Image 1 (cartoon, chains in turn brown, purple):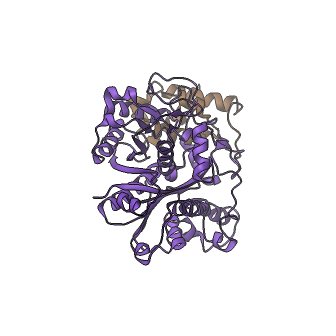
Image 2 (cartoon, rainbow over the protein chains, first blue to last red):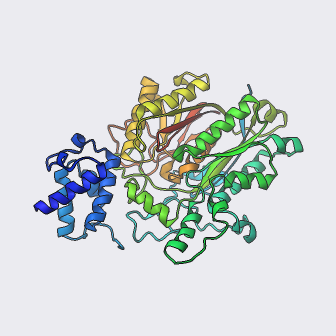
Image 3 (cartoon, chains in turn purple, red):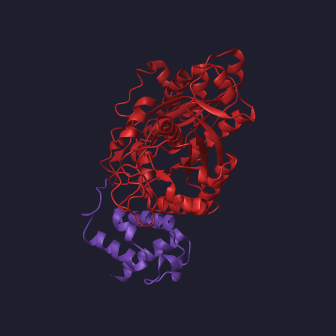
Length: 89
Length: 401
């Protein structure tokens, strides 16, 4: 997991949640950051745009903290979108 | 104060194009969920919906009239025609002037809007069709019903997302009960199978890739539906005096708002709406035998609704039958409350409780009697129907056989 990737995911979360990026560490849970289910869906949307990936619903449901989110993104940009739904864009 | 009778019913949805077909499907526990035909789903994370199969306006409207009506407004008029014919309404000038029309719709004619905007944004056209606005407005269903029958009394539309039709029926019920209107046509209609709308639902990550399995441990979300359902309401004594067939009575209506979250449900808000409906009906909770649940099949709703029902009914919750007919007709958004009111009325009238279809596995956190997969023969005296909308706006109707 590269520093650049971590930084980009933290920035997406910060921008979406409208909180300072410094508040977000790799070990932050969504609960600590006040991220509820609708916020989580908003962040997934922003991540899909940032990384041009498609995050499947099933994978999305498991994510509870920043680390899982970064790992999930890493898997999708590394392994493509093989386990995701087809995308057009 | 009048007692309020349901003397006319009409419905079109994935389960059938009239009340008899709808009742037959509910009794058989037959699901109308199929691969979506109305829109290209190859780029969506879901494929299935509960559409009115092979719908064409032709048996119902000539081309000229249909040109002025989005599909959702067509469903409203089709259901209203059946309900009015079923009620055997004998129109007089006075009745036309004083009858009310109250409809519910969530997205209105957004499919028309979606197509028009596609033309300008994507196809490079410079104009949008001039009927886009009158076809899109959510009150078009009520307006076309008024023109269909020449009804010139109070008519309006309520848009409270998934509670729209229940709020509409509740208002109509109160207007007839109080004597403000001698008759009301009320219900809801919806037709959300347009690509832009489907993409917006996909983004919410609440639509099942499979089917709708309310209260089942393996549930994976909701399934969108479409259709229209309308009721004719009138004072019980007037209905009896003219020898009308009485399908059921509406006896109570309760509303609440969660004041909590724009999408997450609250058990407290749901419970307060159920209590309000039971109280408005002057009943004790123990009188209720059946609940047609909001039961969307999402993780959040089914858990929250279960705990709300337990909070309201206490030990009596163990004796309640609770089913979600969304497992069969899908979640028709602003029409949902009307389809579900219809399911309650038909079940009470014909002596059965409709099932929760597609049910696989008990969920310890949704541990009510959810009438899994097969309808049950039962003479239900009192029932309620729950509608809990996004935005936390709740509406519950109470019925009597």
